[in-house]
Length: 507
Image 1: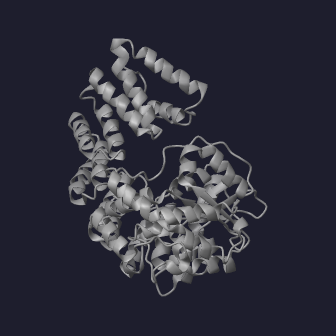
Image 2: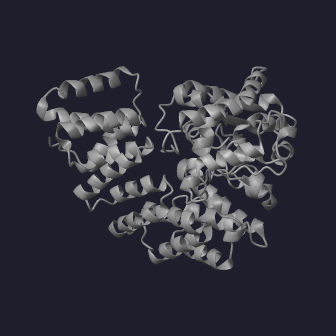
Image 3: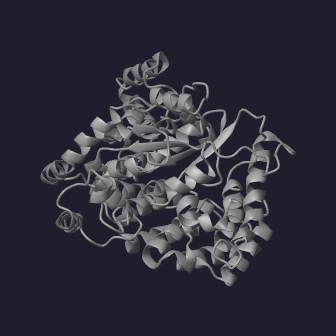
């Protein structure tokens, strides 16, 4: 079936469908029409493809897989786009063998489509197969040498294989060698820049890129993060301020920025636990018309950059005039675990509202492990990680004194699910009326109602949103029933104590 629409027009159509509520009468009518037209044999395969793509863009990958498989069996076998969307959904369902087969079919049918190589690379990356991922990225780069997103994906790959420093060097050199790149900066995880990544040569290369692209906000951010580790960490403040001012005035118009000393301070901080939905929560928060994004989702000021000073932190937020109804905030999940953070925030920003999002701890731990594998920072098997951590701590902590001394959260997957002892620490410094506790399940299943609860907590009017697909979905093989039961038993005393504690009353 030939659809006489440009690629851009088709994408705009799907974008509008994505914003349609699945429960709306219009959506029910749309799928009734697709099913009716699908009974006409010449149209069946294409109608199934359209339905599958709609489910895909909404993040309903089980339904997307069902519809797209039906499209292939109805006559679209060999159609590149159908194999591609099916492979993407299967990647996000953790069905990697099937995903690779379909993505290979998409590449074979359309070998000049760089996006298909990127999707294959992502499927391999989610399995921690970074060496196998690299050739697909270079093929995508050969097709689209000026595409910033491809350069970012290659940055991620090198970081996973060799570390942040070599990845940053390679990225800087490629950007300098490609002065006509379409948009050279796409948030390459500058919050991962640490002391080891700083050197004067990287600073000068970043300055050179900024000279080529003076409006590149994220390049200002990178420069500020690098200078944070110089002998003069406050040298990055003007770059943060410039980036924040440009972004604010892009939205509000020239001259709309307040002086940073008089601008509104941040109003909220979303805290961990990792892989509990903080990225989706922050995305939904920023859909409210009165919330403006910070320069980065994870600023990590209270943990990693406190020595740079409060002026550094405030420069990470838009310069909102005091009389404006708009607010801003951030989401730094590391903050929840850092022992000094509760007292620092209580002293420096006592009016900052805190939002904690939790998740069923067994699923959270397994998702966390798979994310660290994708980043190239974990080589142990899941079984080895569990065995080691349960041997070190036979009982899940409920009180702060039960937490091990010197607890480091990144690769301690199980213990990061023990939120109650840390929550009690925060309440030693902050009134419970300043703290909102959410659950990942409510955010996923009752998105608008949950978000309106958050908006009320922030003293904002309610705002109905149609949630886009969830952010940072894992895409990994499911946890075995035996392991799930073992971990749920370990967590059970903590979960019961947590529910009793929360039942005492929070906003």
